[in-house]
Length: 327
Image 1 (cartoon, helix red, strand yellow):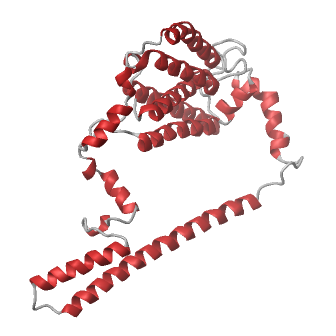
Image 2 (image 1 turned 90 degrees about the vertical axis):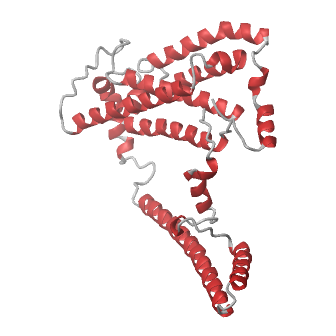
Image 3 (image 1 turned 120 degrees about the vertical axis):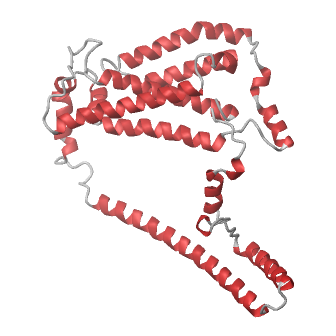
């Protein structure tokens, strides 16, 4: 799933990682800074070599410079630790302060116990056009919350990619040999006849059932999350049965990126328009249709499709990344 980079040693990510670990300082024009134990040894060797090259220099001056640099490094680490603690304490204080102003849990006078639930039940079908109250709630009233959950799935796949990526090209012969041994493409094409025959029968039904769950999410229990999980399981079964070579004929890294990007972009644009018109009391121009019909509920049906595609792609990406470190 990841692209091979031959210049990883000079990449910005490696420099940023070294800076986080305290090995280098990006603000000092590439000057290397080590931990205090190692730094004292390096600085002492540098001072000795400088004294050997320039015998006329003051030895005490080099020692004072070394102590000054060590003191500055220690102060930076102390400052970094203190600021980290202060940041954590500030976040904890803000969260506790917010909780203190929340209404008492279970109080009958809370809006979530009377107004909100009553609005969902009494006006849900009229305002959303969805017979499934849960779908109408998560994809209309709380659509941005669902958009955040979809983004979390996408960010999670990106994090797994960053942690588990394996570069196909390595300058170390031993590492390259280890990666080649771990690559299950060496065992393709798959020759498990029983698994392949079962997959030929089950995969079409799994995919059709997943599509049914997504398309009927506004009419019956289901929706994008559950239907996307079914579609993802169908892709994983096909991959196990026929291998990466055949799966990549229709589902590659480019397909994954384009589907995820288009689905999230459409979701964001569609609900931004919907909330903008609703907040300003404008007509959206999007018909809700007849409740109970497959083409109804306004934007809920296409949003269900977007969520299902994101979930299916994320499940497949997780499996391939944990299996071999890429798509």
